[in-house]
Image (tube, rainbow, N blue to C red; front, side):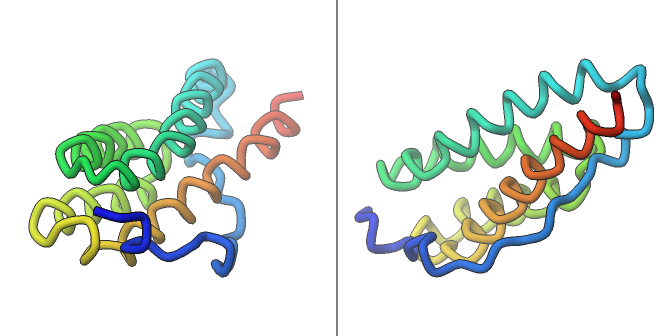
Length: 122
């Protein structure tokens, strides 16, 4: 696969920040902060996985996200990750660029919600 299969993120609209459904539970804050670290690593790594053409690695990453997102209060992120998992497994990377783009935008929106959690926790 070449990087040309996936459109450039330079022309994308940004999504508004989303908050975890668990953000109001102070007992869950430490876990959410750790999860944000994981999300940031996955968000940084996902374009490299896609660019490498490694379908198995992309499906594995999406599967991990779809399995954890709802537990941390991000059901919409889990839905987008599950859509990527299904689309890439069924049609390949080049045919799933729309699903991949939606997942990246949702990851960005979840990460943008982290400052809200920190502000509310203070």
